[in-house]
Image 1 (cartoon, helix red, strand yellow):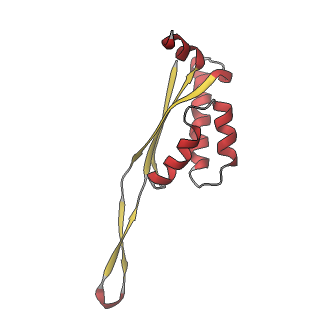
Image 2 (tube, helix red, strand yellow; image 1 turned 180 degrees about the vertical axis):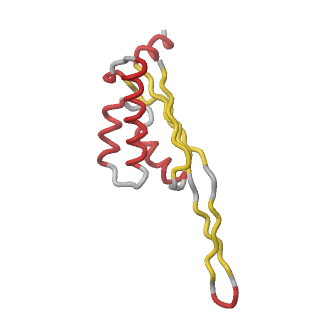
Image 3 (cartoon, one colour; image 1 turned 135 degrees about the vertical axis):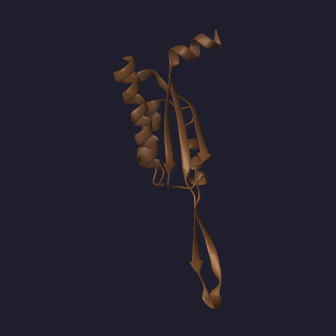
Length: 118
């Protein structure tokens, strides 16, 4: 069974979040939690919270055991951009673009994956 969780409008650029997501894609959930807890990048903490949320919803809503879960899919998309201006001398203005990201995480128990392979 697949459990899908989303995080919208995280105020970190998608490029930085993709670096963290690439570390955990395809790994077991316990290994991914360990990796994220020791990663020092800024997006690691929200991604860890999202992963923990997926595991908690699998346990509470679907009564599944968390030992078998694997991070099946992880995607990062670009969110809204906040456009600001930085005033400079002689009346000029330089743009500041504050980017945000949308994260989609899909975890699955290993049993469903093995059934598809057979």
